[in-house]
Each structure stands twice: as C-alpha cells, then as structure tokens.
Image 1 (cartoon, rainbow, N blue to C red):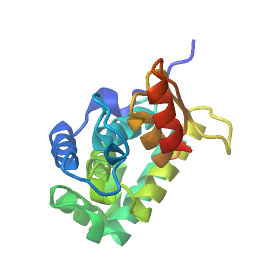
Image 2: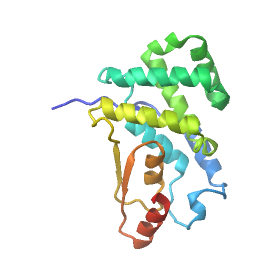
Image 3: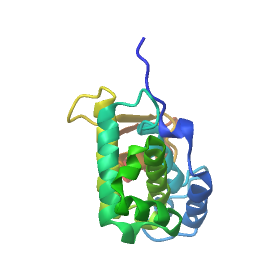
Length: 198
C-alpha cells in the first residue's frame, strides 16, 4: 500500500483570516455568483478557494512530501516574495519581506509551510480572486502537486462535488487549476452549475 503525504489542510489552516474574508464576501454584490440566483446554502467562495488549495497541496514539512513539490513550492514562494510584495496582506508582510531578503529561510520546511499558508490566506480575499499573479501561482502549485503525487504530466487534478448546490466548490476548483465535476439531485442546482461553470 502506497503512503501519501499529509495535505496542508491536515496540518494547519489560517481559519481566522479565511473567515474574515468569507464574512466580508457576503456584502459583495457585483461580479459574485450569489447575484445570479439565491441559493440558501451557498458556501463562501473565500473558504472554498482556501480549502481546495490546502486539500490539493501536500504539506512540504511532511517526510513523505515529494521533493519535486517542495522545489516548485520553494521557487514560487521566493518568486512571490521578490516580485509581488505589493500584493501581500499586512498579516503576511513580515514573512515575505524576510524571504525576499534571505530566500534560504525556505530551506526550513516548516517556514515553507507557513509561507504557503500565508499565500492561501491572502488568496482567499475576494479582491485577489481574479488577480493574475495569484491565479498563476496557485495553478503552478496545483499542477506541481498533482504531478508530484503521481498524476499524468499535462493532466489536471479532479475535484468531484456530487452535491454541488450553488457551485462554489467546482467554481473554485477550476479557478485554482483543477478539473471539476459537479452534480446535484436538485435540477435547479444542476442548472445553476451549468450557468456558473460553462
């Protein structure tokens, strides 16, 4: 039986920061899928985006984490620190400034984990959900994780939501570079998902 590394979500998740973004998201009225149709159990996109990233990406500090993923994660977080400090939140600022000054800080795998979690927390912000730098970085990390864990090179990881409801999980899976399969027993939910995802 093959052993798999723990995913980030199994180790840590910046819940307080993600929750703050999810609360703020409820007041957004332009460009949000909640304006398409009222769905009584719609999940916050911020929380879905963060959870999907943390579930798809392995924990770099886990001894079973593939070195290929660690290498890509380290490169992406160094690039993030050096080129995108203007996109970093005040909560993540000190960590990414320190990395920009000394990239060898990420040789410590716990520090690499913390940088990925800070990235996830910042990406959960609705304002960052369409910023190309966040999208490109999250997609590179998703692809690297998929291939490092045995996925076919060039293919994308699959996220399945059999009770997709308002479509938050499949939408965010597509946003971070995964393929999404969504269904629901309710035909209204199926129609909503077709509109949102196609």
